[in-house]
Length: 321
Image (cartoon, rainbow, N blue to C red; front, side):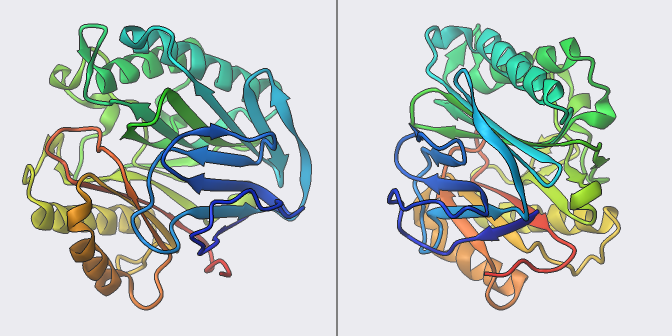
């Protein structure tokens, strides 16, 4: 599997190349395409080259729809995605449990029982639901689905959860025939061990996941922010939060077995307030070096007071542009 960014501002309905495993487009609203390889996610891009991301495979094996769930198979990997328009917005935990349960059942049924990376986009992430904040309700439903599917903690995938103003709950995931290797950050408590102040059930994800098989040497980094231990640091202060976030990324990369100075080949940056984008771009150019592959998107971070979240992918060698 080769993951690449297509540095384009176009989000038109151009034909998808036969070798394309997935095309992920960012726009103002979620949308469903007839091609299961084509995802449209309701997060506005904030910089040039951020609108389209493509994943390419050496060989596609199958693609289609299982009800409302899109899937693509190739190179020993499976992409699944589902958009649900919530009929009961105040029952997000139940909706999440059902959606996750269906996705986990489908990947297991088709022979890809090991989710490596999951992306979650939650409408109005800080609004109330189920008597708590929507993100916490989402987390409760996610834990319940993993528990029902019999997942041990070492199998929990890397993940991110970002708030949107687009309608519904959208989840997409990359799963494998072979298990990945979870990586935790020694500067942070594993999310599944967070104290009850973060919700009745804790967030359930690994800080990173190292691929195996066809993705050996690839590291998927979860959404990473200014969190040390379990506490948010520097609330509502962008510059020190960015410093803390980059330190977390460096520590995680080093813990995975890479050198501390290694930088992700691909980065996606979620920014709460667009007015801070120029400072973030400048800082990340210095941190990443020349010609970084970075997407900047407008999205709400899962905790109030956090202004920026960064995720990434390290590959055995840099992917072509």
